[in-house]
Image (cartoon, rainbow, N blue to C red; front, side, top):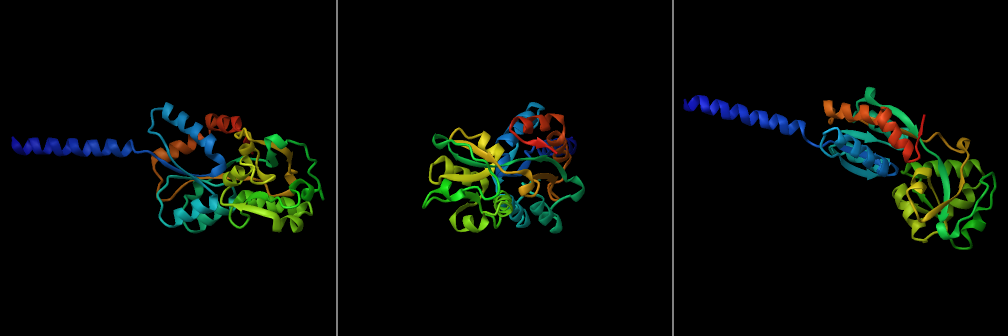
Length: 254
């Protein structure tokens, strides 16, 4: 009798462990510009009865390097293809799971109390906008996708040589946005979606789409976080409900 009771209790314990494992929260590493949209995805996810998602928002480069150092995550969402490719080469990603369905726009923003309209075209007077000592807030072009797109756009428009020594490089596009919101710089370059969630900046102009590489947001399941639940979350993100959420926050479908 005691032996049977022990077996029952052991089996019950294993069942509880299995249920607990299924109920564990998934972890998503996502580019900073996806913050509000992914929190809305979390609401849709929990509405289906799943545990709340855990997030880490930062520059795509930072997140990719954290994955490489063993940080646990189930989903990686990059703001460009370059860092997703970097993660693939290091076998951090389930390559066949990659889905690239979102794009964005690059905009010039200014503090809201200094709102103006600027025709962004080759040779536009950036120096006049910045003034004698002002700097241009951007994600650091060395490792932040938004900064790299900004460098490409300014180069295409013939303005990089004039701008490169007047940058205020930030560790993510959201950090660049914060500099503009605080009035610490007279202007900055961010994504349209970043400008849309801020009540303290105004869009002065949109960079031509052909002035920089296409802004891509590849999503993928990580190799060490590949679970049925992670696959289900990916289906939500790239499905009609997820795409509707991203559209609400200003992202465009490819």
